[in-house]
Structures are given as structure tokens and as C-alpha cells.
Image 1 (spheres, rainbow, N blue to C red):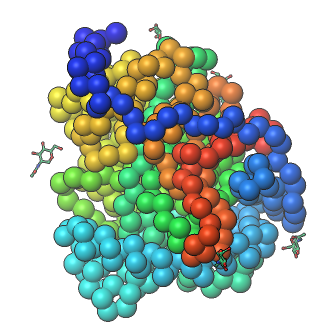
Image 2 (tube, helix red, strand yellow; image 1 turned 45 degrees about the vertical axis):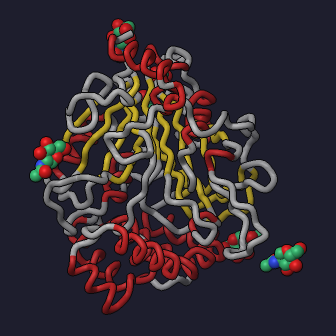
Length: 429
Ligand SMILES: *[C@@H]1O[C@H](CO)[C@@H](O)[C@H](O)[C@H]1NC(C)=O
Ligand SMILES: *[C@@H]1O[C@H](CO)[C@@H](O)[C@H](O)[C@H]1NC(C)=O
Ligand SMILES: *[C@@H]1O[C@H](CO)[C@@H](O)[C@H](O)[C@H]1NC(C)=O
Ligand SMILES: *[C@@H]1O[C@H](CO)[C@@H](O)[C@H](O)[C@H]1NC(C)=O
Ligand SMILES: *[C@@H]1O[C@H](CO)[C@@H](O)[C@H](O)[C@H]1NC(C)=O
């Protein structure tokens, strides 16, 4: 063990309270029953998976980008309407709240646009600025979604721009080699969106399993998303897994013109087979928002965290002090074969995540990371956990039950609910 780790543990013993997390372990066993087929069309199969009262869609998509967009639109039509009909009101409240809290939250031209034409105008402008940097297949898939679901194409395009306007907290962990029980790579991605009962994204969580056809290229991949949303915030292939977290405190230059980061992340899981390929893609991209990304690779059995921004890209691993190569804070000790970022603004002085990871070091498995998320209380809207060696995708989602605004529904965040295991050996070619 590193000297720093020992110092950290001694500090913990002295200041016991700081080491302690806010909550205990996740109380549920992992749900591991097979998905149930619900409906199908020529280019998609829709399943449901999960325990009673906590089910998620699982949709397998085949064909060209247009064909699979169309098939998803057909099969998830009413669910897409639930989300799209409520989304813009919700995001308007959220964005206005963020603007009032953070002076430099959005550039002036976007704030002016919101005052003049509402959030939809800001989303239209974002779509315009990112258009020429976005691969054509995303537009084809969105056209398919529109034609299959009956939601207007422009509305679909607008919704797909929202990640460029919001800032989510989130945590990530990559643990591999000596740190894990099976010595393979495990990757945790916890999405903290601010779990609001009125958030329509909680209604229809969807695991999408893509089988890209030859004309499109790439390999099979799985994402955890919402009915009718094609960007990737949480996703995995047998080669590469991704995480993402908003980077508060980035002080470099910014741009609104480039490829939306959630489309870039999907390019990575569809096409890239190693961290180096993903980093090449990141380095060569016209980048917009400043976010932290996490990249895991099966072939090298490693994980790297990335400071991703318009101006520069910096890469961190278990040997590099994070963030910014600055001296490692006591609460963020370097841990061999573990790379992690907690849900707080970085550098974080919260000791929970490091202490949980140190305690389970050498025997980290899916349950240990599920418990880490529960103890840190991270991942309110959803959590994805990828076990590369076994090719398993574990997901947990916040309460799905609707309708929105019904005060009688108790809303429980993803980290406190039962995780669902998706065996991708069954689906990946
Ligand atoms: C299955 O999908 C088709 C095509 O969208 C739809 O017309 C039909 O109503 C669906 N069936 C069920 C049982 O949901
Ligand atoms: C895994 O750990 C062992 C022991 O520390 C080390 O010798 C080996 O190089 C590591 N493997 C990788 C892929 O880093
Ligand atoms: C920006 O942040 C980095 C560390 O993240 C720091 O070294 C640098 O001085 C900062 N620059 C400005 C202009 O604040
Ligand atoms: C991923 O790693 C596992 C174990 O290290 C290996 O069995 C499997 O073939 C790898 N998968 C791919 C697609 O390389
Ligand atoms: C909530 O529960 C109360 C008491 O059971 C009931 O009267 C009320 O109609 C419910 N509200 C909604 C929106 O379902």
C-alpha cells in the first residue's frame, strides 16, 4: 500500500466522522432473471426486464440507422410521447434555475436566446452550431425515430441537444487487475441529475442494444438511456466503456461549436476498440463542453479518466494525481489499479468513496461497487455498471412510476433500488 494511503487511513481514524459515508449498503440482491419479449418489428425486439414495479425496457436494434430509429419509434411510441410532451417545460425550469445560480453558466448569446425564444430557441441554436460536426448517421436515426413515433423531427433534434445545456454531478470508478476479485475491469457510472419527481426522463428508462449493420460499421454495444434518446451518457461494448461527469471549475476557453459530447461518446463505444483509439477520437474532435470522461478498455484491462474540454485534453490513471495533476488531496488518495471521481466538485474533500474502495480493494466486485454507490448516495437518475470480463451490464434506475406530479408516488433514487443484471453474452454477437 502506498504511504499516502496509510496517511489517509490514519487521518480517517483521527477524524472518524469524515470517513463515514452518508448511508449504508444497497439492501437488495441483484435481479438476474431473463428479459421477457414484449413486442417486435422487422428491425427491433422489445423486452422488459426487472422485478415487479421496477422494470426497464430493453430494446435490441438492427438495420441501418434509419431502420433502427424507425423501429424504436414504432415500439416505444407512447413512451416517447410521455417524455417528449413533458420534457421542454421541465428543462426550462431546470435551465433557468441554473442560470440564476451560476453567473457564467451559459454564454450571453444563449441566455439572450432563452429570454427571447425560450429554451427551444437555445436548443435550436445548439443544433445549428453542432450540425456540421455531427456524423450523418445520427440525423438518419433521428429521422427514423420521428417517422416511427409521429413526434416532429425538429422536436426530436431539440431534445437531443439538452446535454449541451445542463450540468450533471455524477461519479465514476474504474477498478481492474489486482483491485478486483476476478482481476478483470469493472466500471461504475452513476448519473446524478438532481432527482426531481417531475423529471420525465425517469418514466421510461431503456437499455438499447445496438447491432450496427455493415454499412454503418463498428461492433455491438449497449447503452442505458430513455425511450427516444439516442445520445450516450452511459454505455458499454465488449471493447470500451464510457462514463461522463460535468467539470465544474474548468477555466479554459469554451465553444458551442463542435460535436455534442454525448454523440462523441456513442461514436467511441460503437467504433473504438481501445482507450488509445478513443483518445485519438477525442483529441481530433471539435470539442464543446468541459466534462470529465472515464474510458475503460477490455483488451488492456485498464481505465483512464480524461479532462475533456474545448481547449485541451488531459489523461489520468491510478498513478496520476487527479484533478489537474495537482497534489493529491488527502480525501483522494491514489489507489493502485483504481481510478475514481466522486460526485462532488473536484478536487473533492469528501472521503467516502476512497474509503469504501480501499476497504474492498482486492475483492472489488459488482456488489462492492453497488454498495459504494449506495453509501456515497450517487446515481439518482440512473447507474450503469460494466463487468468486462464476464460481459455483464448492471443497471439501476430511479422510480419509473407516473404520472408526473402525483404526490402519492414515493420517488426512490437509483442508488437505493434493486439493480438489474443484463447478460450481454446473450445479445452480443
Ligand atoms: C407491437 O408493435 C406494433 C408496431 O408498433 C403495434 O402496432 C402493436 O400495437 C404493438 N403490440 C403490442 C401488444 O404492444
Ligand atoms: C497486474 O498486476 C500485476 C501485479 O501488480 C502486474 O505485474 C501486472 O503487470 C498487472 N497487469 C496489468 C495489465 O497492468
Ligand atoms: C486554471 O486551472 C489550473 C488548474 O486546474 C491552474 O493551474 C491555472 O492557474 C488556472 N488558470 C487560471 C487563469 O485561473
Ligand atoms: C474481454 O476480456 C475477457 C477476459 O479478459 C476475454 O475473455 C474476452 O475475450 C475479452 N473480450 C474481447 C471482445 O476482447
Ligand atoms: C392521493 O391519495 C389520496 C388519498 O388516498 C387520494 O384522495 C388522492 O386522489 C390521490 N391523488 C392522486 C393525484 O392520485
